[in-house]
Length: 221
Image 1 (tube, rainbow, N blue to C red):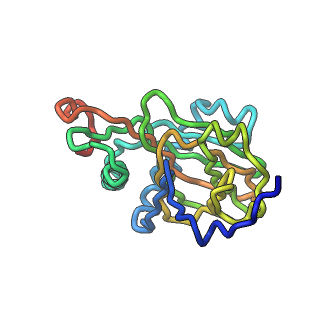
Image 2 (cartoon, one colour):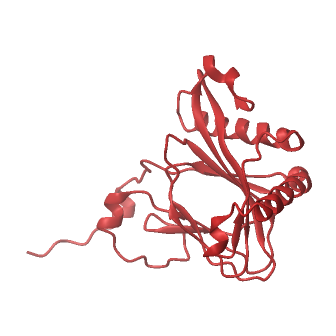
């Protein structure tokens, strides 16, 4: 049986389902103080040998820093923006606060990368705030989270073009740029290619009922 060829673009209307949102906002005003505080925390982590990663990979990660008074303005701004992003997506967050789980500085040296992962344990939203981005820095990779598509996927016609067929999207970091997305979106970082380190803050936020928010130092309604 021979099927008649038709021009589907003239007969069908396409629409998106189950979209994945990624937001970005340029915040150069917080870079200097975030870098100052982050460098201090990284230095302390190195001295206290709390960075197990350095034994295997040329990377350092600080302890939690979201409640440091010097950076609290940025912490509140980032949490507020994340809350608004969830509301924009259609979630009922009117009676929900977002509280910090983590905000830590990452310093990646030449050869360092980060494996594919998501943030579980009820984390709802994640963010990346880039502070130092030398040439040939790692790229942030955002991976398709749909298991069904991964299992039965075709090859992309052009992996440099963002399309319905895309398996991953590469984001080139920019100094002062805050990227926000849902915690269930898998992400990773490509291998860093410069002797000067890539530095950024990584943030995870968790939901909590508004009635309980007073128990936390940083929260947003």
